[in-house]
Length: 177
Length: 192
Image 1 (cartoon, rainbow over the protein chains, first blue to last red):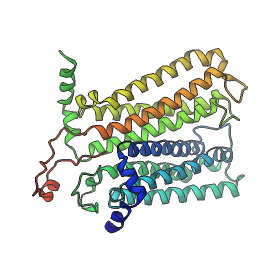
Image 2: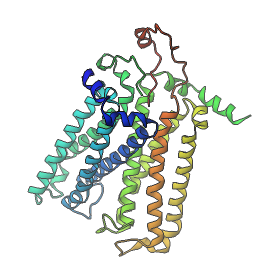
Image 3: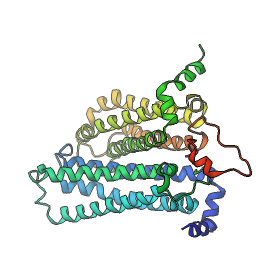
Image 4: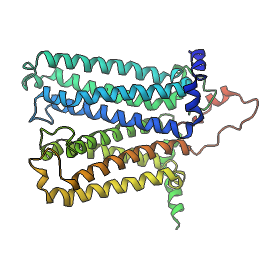
């Protein structure tokens, strides 16, 4: 992974961002944060409808179709800006525990979202408000929110990977920008 | 008493001292700050897009706003609390930091924009009942809101690159620097 990081950091794109990093890194990170806002806002709204805490004048299917196109678009924007950040500073990401924990949580979160979309699509009538009163559905919804909050925590902790101690693959021989 | 004296007194508070010294406190506060601020912007975005007639147009503005704004205020309170707790670890550095000042001015402008919208625009047009797209003053408020909050995010991100979050002396850049010693000491690594 270390050699791979070193190779990425010699590519044209990586060098270009490194040479302009004073403004490019914060700019890409800011776009990344705007994308996260769309994701967390959309997830919260669908969760509120499932928990019957909002959007009660709309069906669950209607709320889902309002937010999932935005969620999808934001995920694509996040993948692009995230990839740019990875290419710019490969060792910072690939040699950190937080980054891989974040990736694992994203896989779980996207898995839940995909399963949710196909279930709601197939059984629209089944997702009536009586079904939504079930405790298991409420618990699953809260856990889903926790997964995405965890993604944000792991993302920010990439900058502080030393907090993981021996779990962090980085040897901390350099400041971890 | 000069303002810098007050800031110095704040920096000497036990809670400031604790956050500066604890390994996890600042990183966790910053992570929570990101959760709260993305919730603030994410929820404001939904309301602004409704005003612009882009999304949620099958709902009235009033219904949408009453579902969402409480979450915006909850998240904003969390962002302020975590922000203050980070600020007091190093108040003079932040106060003198230009991106920090820009962020505060942008926050103030976003607040004024919201105040004008809530006190005048909404009342004048009776919550824009029955219209997909809100009238021009409300659309201007929505665009201003999106621009100002994006600016808050951008300026906020730059703060991390123009300050060191802990007022500690880093190990001297000696040729034979022993990194193992650096690691086992309690000196936090600079982070952004």
